[in-house]
Length: 106
Image 1 (tube, rainbow, N blue to C red):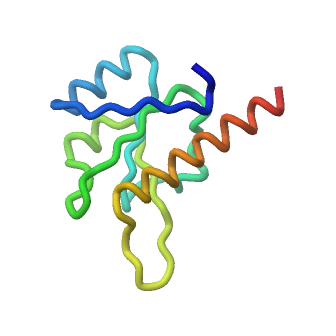
Image 2 (image 1 turned 60 degrees about the vertical axis):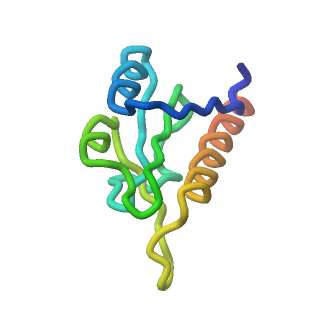
């Protein structure tokens, strides 16, 4: 699969799915307002799964603990968060940008 392609999955048990991904050498990052790393500073050149929480509630504490790390999207002004699809689009675009840059450098 080309590096700029994405696979999407909706799963019934996200914690088990995360553990399976990790056993298969996939980094798991969660999008969370309290994330330690800004989304554009996270390294997404390696195989990476992106966990997106529900609008309003976000990612559960259990799922946050299972992620390798959490990334945040800095907000400006009075806006406190983005809807899930917009947040996902930003992070996936950044992953694609990093992977395309890497292919030009090699």
